[in-house]
Image 1 (cartoon, helix red, strand yellow):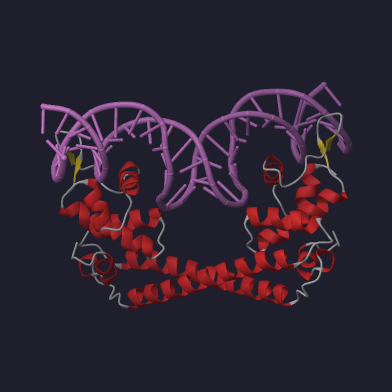
Image 2 (cartoon, helix red, strand yellow):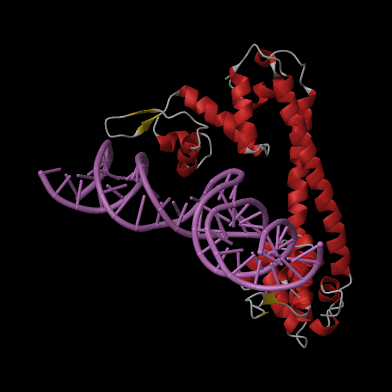
Length: 131
Length: 131
DNA sequence: TCTACACTCTGTAGCAACTACAGGGTCAAG
DNA sequence: CTTGACCCTGTAGTTGCTACAGAGTGTAGA
C-alpha cells in the first residue's frame, strides 16, 4: 500500500502520515525501489487506532501510551482505563468552562441595543473603565 | 508605569505584553532613558480590554477587530454584535462536539471489565479490527 | 561604596498537531 | 513522449503564548 492509499483509507492527510512517522508514532515502513513507502496491514491497523483515538480527543502523547499498552496483551487493563478517565475529566472541565463562557457571552450579546459603538454594551463590558 | 506593573495590573505575563506589542495589538509605549517601556493609562485600558476579550475566548484576530471597532465611536454597533455572535456560535459548536465525545468516551470506559489488555474493551473499541 | 537582587532589554527557540509549500523524482495512460 | 497524478525530502507557517540566554539597570541594605 502506498502512502496515498493508506491516507485515504484512514481519512488522514499524506503529510500527517509522514508526520506520525517522524515523531515515532508510526513505524517506518519498507520502501519500494523508487523509495516510495510501502505499508502493510499492520500499519493500517495502527494508523486506524491512532486516528480513532485522536477523534476521541486523546493527545498524541496519550495515544503513544495507549499504543504501548495495547502491545502488552497480558498486562492489566487498568492503565488504559486510567488514561481514558483522565481524558474524560479533562473534557468535563472544558465543557464546564465553555458553558460558563457561553452564558456570559450570551448575556453580553443580549444587552446589545444596536446603536452606535459609543453606546455599545458589548464594548462597554470589555472595557469596564469606559475606555 | 513599567512593564512589570502593567503586567501584574492586568494579570498578564511580561512576555505576553511584549508579544502583544510585537504583533501590533498594543501600541509601542515611550521609553525611559534606560530604554524601559513607560506605559500610561491608555495602555492599561487597552490591555485590560484585550485580556477581558481573551478571557471570553475571542481570538487575537477578533480582538484586533473589536479594538478597531471600539475606536470608531460613531459607527454602528452591529459589527461588534456580529463578531460576538460568530464567536458564540463557535462555542456552541465546541460544546456540542465535546458533549458527544464525552458520551462516547463514557460509554467506552463503562465497558471496561478491568481484565487484561487482551480483553480490554477500550483498546478493542480503538482498534475495531482486533489489532 | 559595594554588592546583591529584582527588574528590564533584545532575540531566538520551543510547545501541540498538524498543514503547506518548494523543488525535485517516478509511474501509468493515452 | 508527454501529461498528470502521485511520491520524496526539508523547511516554514499556523495560534498564543512561554522560556530561555545574555546583557544592562535600578535600588536597598551592610
